Image (cartoon, rainbow, N blue to C red; front, side):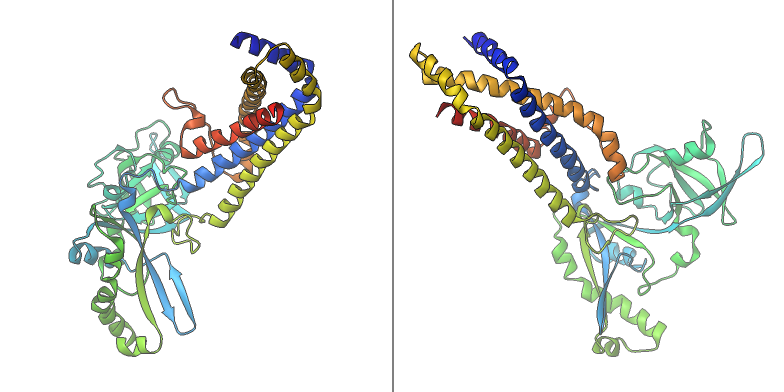
Length: 419
């Protein structure tokens, strides 16, 4: 019986070529547009979520209060990282990152003993806890110690390849700003979906000013890894005491003004935490290392994707109902010959399923063709990953919802055609 349904469905589809073509093209173009938008939105929402224990990592952010304005700053004084670990048991680790230092002149001796010179961007200074907090994959070196000592340097895989070619960069000597650094580690390039963008990391201990206490001048990005089960809001509530204890004395010494008078005039510092996974889309660009995303744009794109799906469904239904008077005669003849309503439903359902699957297949083909051009437009490297373990269409909750939406025109068509 099922074979007969399929055979008759194909005959009707072939007989109505124009109707089938319009239906398939309408569905496929709508699906392709929504897939591309969904890939972009999922990429924007995935930032920094692939790090191990990402939910336990937070960024320390400064709110600088002045009588006439409030300024949010991504940087904070570097000395807070040490006292937070020392004074607050909730904080497991803390790390400081400083930069970027762009257009840095670096040089080294090649295999033929000739001196090679480069201008390098994306250079940051970081302390040894960076690789103990963030799970960047280390290819060579000890992640626990490779930024511990002054004049230590870590290269990303692509930077090492660019500078040294097929030679092993580990242990090489590189001169930068008059100092000779030893390559103590090589790590994988930061993934695209992170607000980190670096090519070279040097030990922050190399820079003398970071060895002097500073609780007032913002000069680093500070990240904290909290112990499991710690409450970030409870930790935040203790920060005013931290400011009064450390920043006040440092401020009075540097400005020759009492801390009480400074606060009385409407000034002050407030420190708060932002979860790692929310940094990229924060409207105040508290990441500081690359331009932030736009949550409003993402919401607009989601609305557009939903609207396109609705339009595609309506178009599918309208085309089906437009042919209802043509199919009414067929339904009458089938009923006169003894067909039951359930059999008619399966017949029309077979046709709708075949057209829908044709639309899905064409949309996959169109997506593969359009994706490189879409990547150029949005300046990303979006990819469709087909795996044997999980089907692309049901890879996540969003995909389940999308698959459900795709079935709407099928069942709506059956309803209109059999009612």
